[in-house]
Image (cartoon, rainbow, N blue to C red; front, top):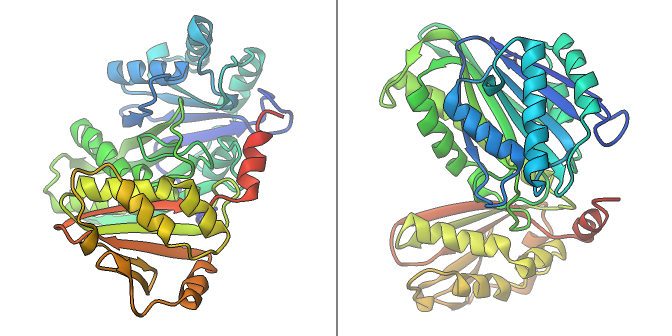
Length: 400
C-alpha cells in the first residue's frame, strides 16, 4: 500500500466483494457509487482491440455523467466479439435496475485473461451484496478488489485547504504487467470532493495521465482494457472552472502528486521487479524527442536484464539512445550518467568512469539513468523496472 491511511471522499462510496467470477474467496467485483451531480472524465487504452467494457464505458461517459462504476477482475472480456459486448451491456443493465438508474449511467471496467467472457451468475448474485456494502471508507477494499498479478493494493490520498474548505483527493490503481506509456496503462480511479467543471476535468485527466501513467513502462505492452478515471463529486467548495485560478492550480498540483504516487507504485510492484528506475532525458530538440529516447531505453530488454543483474553494461543504454526513432542525433554531444556516476561524455566513455563505480550504483534498489543529448531544451522522463526471472515465470504461468 502506498499510504497506510487514506481519506474518504464525500460523495463517493465503494464496495468490493468476492463474487467468484474466476477464483473463490478473492475480492473480484468492485462497485463505486457517485453522488448525484458528480462529474467524471476518462482516458482509455489506445490498443485497437479495445475490450467490450472500454467501448461501452466510452460511449456511456459521452452520453451522461456516471452514477456507478463497476469493475471486475478475472476476465478482461476482450477479443470476445458480439457475445462479450452483449454480456457487458447485460451487467450494466443489471446494476442499473438494482440501483434505479439508467444503464448509460453505469461505466463498466474489466481486467484479466483476454479472449474469454465472464459468467453472469457472479454478477447476478454479487451486485446486490456490493450495493448493500457501499461505504466511503472502503477505498482499501476496492484497491484489493481490482488487483490481478499485483502483490499489494495501491491507494494514495491527499488533503489540501482551498479558501477555508478542506478538499480531499483519494485514488486507487492496479497493474503490474502489460504496461507501456500509451494511455492508458492500467486501471486507475482518482476522486476528489472538489467542485470542478466538466471542461476542466476533461483537460486535466489527459494532462495528469501524461504526467504520470503515460510515463511508466514495465514490458512495452499496452493492454486492451486500460482506463483512468478522474471524478469530482462536487460536494465541497465553489465551482473551479478557470485553469489560471490559484485554487485550480493548487488542486491540480495535489492531483498530480496522487497520480504520480499511484503510477510509481505500479512500477515498484511490477511483475518480478527488484529495482525502481527513473530515466531522465534532457538536452533534446523537443520534449517529444526526449520522451522517445527515454521510452526507448525503458523498453529495452537488454537494458532491463542488465539492471536485474546489477551489470553496468552501459553500452546497452548507449545503443538504445542511438536507435531511438528521432530525426537527428549528434552522438558526439551525448552524455550519460548512472545516478551520480558519469558514464559517457561527448559520445565516449568518460575519463573518470570505473567499472567499480558503475557496479556500485547498479546494485542499488533505486537507480536514475540520465541522458543529455546536447541538442536543445527538451526534456522527458520514464519510470521503469528491471526484468527478472520471476517476470518470465509469472507470465508463463498467467493462465494456470
